[in-house]
Length: 303
Length: 282
Image 1 (spheres, chains in turn green, purple):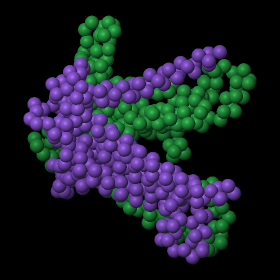
Image 2 (tube, chains in turn green, orange; image 1 turned 90 degrees about the horizontal axis):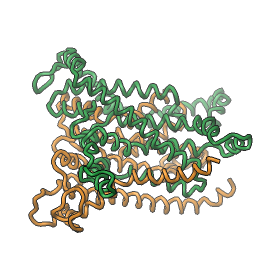
Image 3 (cartoon, chains in turn yellow, purple; image 1 turned 90 degrees about the vertical axis):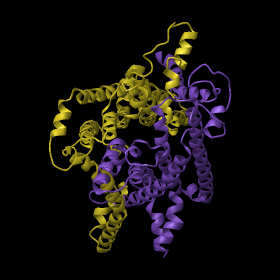
Image 4 (cartoon, one colour; image 1 turned 120 degrees about the horizontal axis):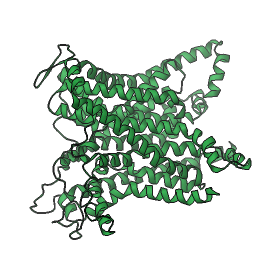
């Protein structure tokens, strides 16, 4: 790619090259247009629709296109909906921190301490395989694990650590956090491992030869060089957690209401305009988070 | 040195992490062999394959109704297949376009990538609103299908982009300058080189679509896909037949992965053989 770009200014003066460049560009646009049209019609247009409908008038079972800010006013003055924004942000922050804390040491081990390429790949594959199974099944698998008669309570009781089963494990915010951390930490481990494994061995050796302790090496070399991986992982996890509703719906026993859950329940009762307002709020939050993250790293260069 | 301590500590931690990843699925698999009178928890009353037979409709009358997976499974497979074909074609075309430098490539790149980033519940809601306004009936093969492609096409695009970045354009140019038609060049030169990428893109698209749930929830209309049927059982009491289903669907996903691996090995094996001379020169 770099060779091509340096060639371009030299050849652009010759007319056959210019002609070819023009045909190439026309060809590129033709190849690209189906994809761009698809994304515009089936992604941008629906998203625009969400914004538009959030200003429609909501009647009992329908919406009509008379523009009003009534839905917005109701949303922003309702403690339930504002609470949902708070819950979404809290769950997002905790899960993001948890996936990073749980995942980073694993990435450090696979990327830095495992020297054998085959073992490295095998460990990474072992981390990715659960992602290959059904999302809903992985969510529901936490029920027999965390329930009052679940595996954890049974084991703890057998070991004599507790006498009564722990009830806060399932159908609580705790179970939602555990479930989301398990499901999404793969997206943190992958990018971070990738960045750490790319660090030149000789840089670390040089630091060690100069007498740097492991703590210094980690702080001055490994951590800064792994940051793009952390950011990419954080973007993945954030986008997925912020748009979540299934984990909360099936593990919280209706105790955790995320913005996603609000949208689902509003659509269920045909309150399209309120659902749209919740959708716009969600879009604003996600856009803010991604913009913030992209300030730190250029995603296109990392991928 | 603390490093000597750190290595086994991190190895142990990674082991615990893998247990955390796999634990729930293992417990679920164990409980799927629960006896007919057992519930979806410990203890195991007796070991049996009752719930597998129940799932397949081989048991006689039961206190638990059968999981409604038959028709929805077929729908999900058809939907995943349609999604795979369209997203691999779109992804290959777009990635091919990105081999030429053109103005506006940045925004187009982000537009495509947005498809895998935007939450399913949002585009699902938007598509439902749009079909309401336009008076289009929602269906898994229509409104849900186009959203599945919105989701999987970026994955196919990224995979193909990675393949094209590593593939020297002069190979194609040589073929073209020797008078081979562009269509023939694509079939005989370009396609064999990009085939591993196509296979990976297809695997991604198929698996993601087969399992996709949030994009389908508002857009599938009356006929449910497999994940929707499964989600429907969550709100009522769950029984070990759901666990049996979980084990079977996991096995299905792994079978796909194995087929992919075999195809990949076979293909890259013959390719390495064919081009071994060239690689030695390079």
